[in-house]
Length: 154
Image (cartoon, rainbow, N blue to C red; front, top):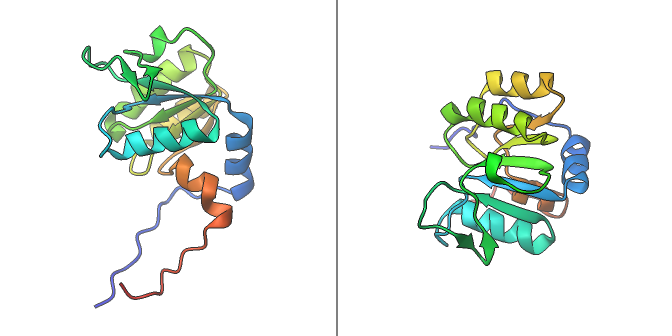
């Protein structure tokens, strides 16, 4: 029996996403992991290798670096301007992270796939940030070159 494709209610124009990914240089990843099996590690790796200045954020005192990149305990501790805050945390945490992104004067709040909160989006937009929710920047970077064939049998 075929399964229904689940579509995100958050649809963005490809030009909007492309402009964000072209304009940002520094990305703070809240919820970055040093575990190579975690999705956040793979996304951080690809974005870093693509040329973005990645800033891993993780409050674990045991985690001091990922891929040779210094890990910060919080957004407030970051010692340079941040263009985009990418969130790999539960949706329930997005509102407080949006507040922190506003405080550090980030330009973009990006919720990873499965991370979304309409209140957080409104808060960030009202403060002048661009907002993307329930999307992966790694996927969006390569989307122009990748055409999925969802009709193929597995």
